[in-house]
Length: 213
Image (cartoon, rainbow, N blue to C red):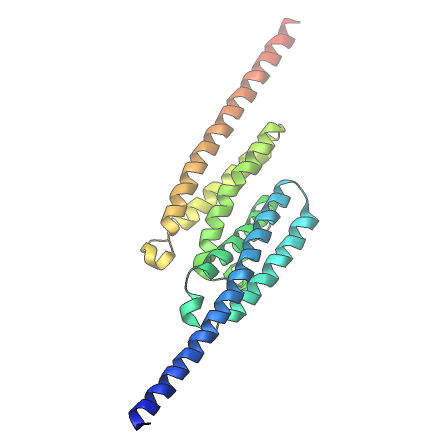
């Protein structure tokens, strides 16, 4: 065997070994990321159903799966930044931040959650959109005060993220997520306004009825 062939075989073998490791890490991370997304979505549903213990348990499952995925791909940047890990981090951040926003608790930042800053911002924007469901539930139950509080939270999140002025290639598409949040925010503002007007009308009718007595 020539020296050239020997060098080629050695180089190719090294590359193949690295690619094999990356592929194995990808398969592990993909499965873990699917668990993250599933558990995060279930946690959000549990929050809306007022099942805090179940929500926290599901967040624990999502967190463990996310750490498994992150550890698997850390040695392989090409896999690490392929996109699916970002999506899982975003879903996990959304679940955590939805819980915090609804409860009125301090927000956990990217470092506290162990996620990339871009994933955190997109998760925050989607968490604010998720508040619409909770807001409508509060309005249906007659809790206008909490409905107005949740609307205020949505506004604050939107205003806070609007200062981010970088290309989508840098923010991973944050602007598109904010456009969606703005649409949800405007619909929610209309719902709250309608409820406020109806409540004022109801009180006026009751006051007029009492005066007639």
